[in-house]
Length: 254
Length: 156
Image 1: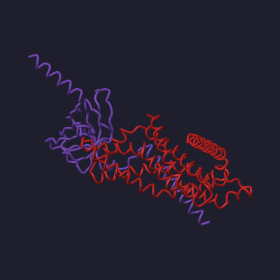
Image 2 (image 1 turned 180 degrees about the horizontal axis):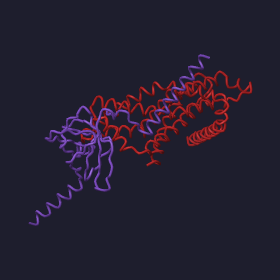
Image 3 (image 1 turned 60 degrees about the vertical axis):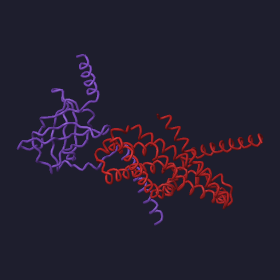
Image 4 (image 1 turned 90 degrees about the horizontal axis):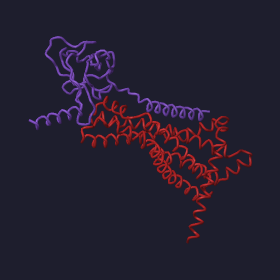
């Protein structure tokens, strides 16, 4: 029993170390891919970012709208319904924007990356590339990693901006909060450092989510079941890591 | 070829949207003012104390927003705050002896300028100044006044 636990822990450490080495290899090859094979990165930005735009924008409008509703309902009790703009902006820019985008990104783009790479591995495409002296790290992994890491901050920014408009529609156009007060309270309450905190979070989450997706695909057992499991693990591990990192970054920033 | 073009177009659109959203968030651009410079006129008023009045705060008459604060400055010669605001040209017939006071909407709400109509036959125009003003109520002053009064009352 105890020995079993010891082996489990050792296996976890081994995997964690392998992930770090994989990450360093990705980073080492990143500049070369970025300058020589930029087209591949663009293709992946399209896959991970542009194709996620619809889900991000739809979710953003409704998350912003519900924040507007809740904020208005609770702030109106203190006659402070004007502050609903500041309330939504705080919630969206600092927390919900980066976190929900990262979770949606893991569900939309992360799973696609993991299953695509897992299937490449299951059908021996990676081995075939190596046979043709093509480095799969440069041809497959780095462009996908970079595409995800570039897309995620942009998606989070789109999510927050669209969310603000959703809150504006609900609070100003439906509930009758003054439009000037909505923006004015937001500008008075929000510090540039709050915006930067959100941007830092979205960059970190983008790197983590893309790394986990690519790693899980790379590490998948090359069977139909293994690819399915890798896809599930991508979402679960990304969610856990993103929420823990969110707490840590917030604790450092405050 | 067609395939690559659509990918490039989609990527371009996405990156453009993302950067535009980032720009919007960092600068907090406000595009929904509702009052453009062309159909509004500018009025100034001097206050002893503006409290926490901010730019773009509403100017209201009988509770209806008719304009916005455009600038707040300190006049070093008269040692007063000069607030200028734009009023929608639709409401051009406001008597020039109306008085302006800085009010708070609700207990914790934001501050705004409330106009109270006067009885003059002349109307406010572009560049005119409101003579009668009332400063913002500062909570600390109120409390100290209350304490002072109740203190003197008990000693009598």
